[in-house]
Image (tube, rainbow, N blue to C red; front, side, top):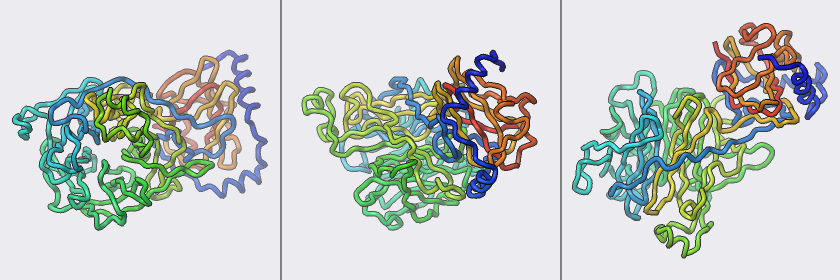
Amino acid sequence: MKIPSPLFSLLLSSVCLVGAVPPATSAEAAEAAKSIDPVNIGDRRELFVDHFLLDQLNGTRLQWHAPRDEGETFAFDEPWEGLFSGYATIVTLEDGRFRAYYRGKAVANADGSEEEVTCCAESNDGRTWTKPKLGIYEVMGTKKNNVVLMHADTSCHNFSPFRDPRPGVPAGERFKALGGTMKGGGLTAWKSADGYRWEKMAAEAVITKEMVPYPYMFDSQNVPFWSEAEGKYLCYYRVFEDKIRRIVRSESDDFLIWSAPVLLGYRHPGKEAPIEHLYTNQTSPYFRAPHLYVAIAARFMPGRQVLTEAQAKAIEVNPKYFKDTSDAVFMTTRPVEGSEHAGVYDRTFLEGYIRGGIGAQNWVSRTNYPALNVVPTGPNEMSIYVNQDYAQPTAHMRRYSLRTDGFASLHCGYAGGHAITKPVIFAGKELSLNFSTSAAGGVKVGIETADGSAIPGFSVEDCVMQIGNELDRRVTWKSGSDVSALAGQVVRLRFFMKDADIFSFRFTE
């Protein structure tokens, strides 16, 4: 795409002058390049949610993007659901439909009580939801209900299922789940062919309280999944460490034998990341980049009371559930092997990612807890679901939307700037950007050697200015879009930007 030369000159001069740094000598650059091992990104999609691939930022920064409130999706209004429903999981089915699993609990009593049931709701588009009448269990005198599990020791308290994409998985194990509490001895493994009818995979818990060297564990949602990137099952679950709600990780090859847990730390560029109470972690592979595990966690603020007694009474919240408050935070983590970001959560963005909404009902204990999984709900959109109005008659599930890949972006303002990646090795023929610019802005990409030298034909000056708002724009240079001649080599990408955001990039065939 061409633009008038005056605008090209203005943009290029702004980008070059603002935040620019003197180029290193070739000797200095070569020496610096030796200290950074190249990252083999192959043809995978990379999102700008952390500093994993970034080496230099000049007039650019990482910026998070607030999800849009799309309103209530369904209420927890069945007699067996109620005020204390929660710990939801959104599963994308093989045909593209969605199924939500969640705890039904109408009374405030002990975790793992017999009154707890696991319910489901379904949707074709992620917007309109219905509750199927399954007829599997009789609940409160009727089999016309949406209950998929009950009387299951303590598993219904925090039942966390997933559709298993492991190659060769038996038909009877297409769905798997973990659930349980300390009272029940630990986490029990479950399997199902259809996601409705469940049976235990083993008589005893597979992650036991004896395996976990912490004083308290398991009482919130414990999230398992099959990792395509690591070729194994993972479970991220909660423990108490020094009286703080923390997250540990265990691994398994068969979903039955699990490793001892490893406590995860937190990373924040330039400063120490705070250790906060994370009630649920909701860690899962991002559906467009399964090597990136996204965690939209519930941050719990114990004792941080917002409401007065009168406000609490007015919204009819249970008297035990308004002395604390909570919101959601955004984190990422990566496969254990081969990354300095592994074994920790990256908290580039410390701010609340989904804040409590307007109104007293949004500022009670244990509200604003995100459901597990981010799912695609449109050609340009993905959705996050949040449990709101906890312990109130208005308890419900709410939907928030984002641009596809739009958790965060590499952002540049009107003054212009650039960013340089670490050395990378890619596979593919073309470079695709998910990006957005203003009418006055633009993006250009240069491909350089590891020491920062321009590669003839692929320099920033050779790149055609990219202007617009697209999920999949093929970058072109004067010679065209084919970059296959550079595939397999160690290179860096230089992004020149003005009034623009880049959400992700990928090399494709």
